[in-house]
Amino acid sequence: EPFEEGETAAIPPPFGYRIAARISVQPHILMPFRSKSEKRASFTTPTSRYEKGESSVAAAARQIRPTLTIAESRRADCRLRRERRYFRTVATHYVQEAAHSRDYCARIMDYCQS
Image (cartoon, rainbow, N blue to C red; front, side):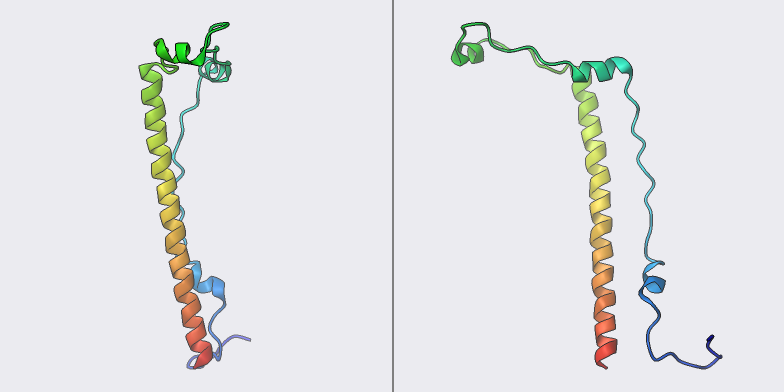
């Protein structure tokens, strides 16, 4: 039954009405697609760093070639920074939503106790 003008409700509006105005959606961060050669390179098995019959000390003593080239390393670093920034944003939104929920819960508890 709809309210008449000037009437007041004995209970607060349902939970969804107040919270819905606070929810915001962040745009998705676009990630570039990798080419087939890049995918193939990431799924190849690395070669062993030990020679047959060689001790681990001898293997550690000789210079081992880095597994990533400089360009690949930079791309990986950029992607890592981008992902960290995205997840930090998501975590911040979760913290804000939790704070809003606690505030709303406290208001409801105060209202019920009064």
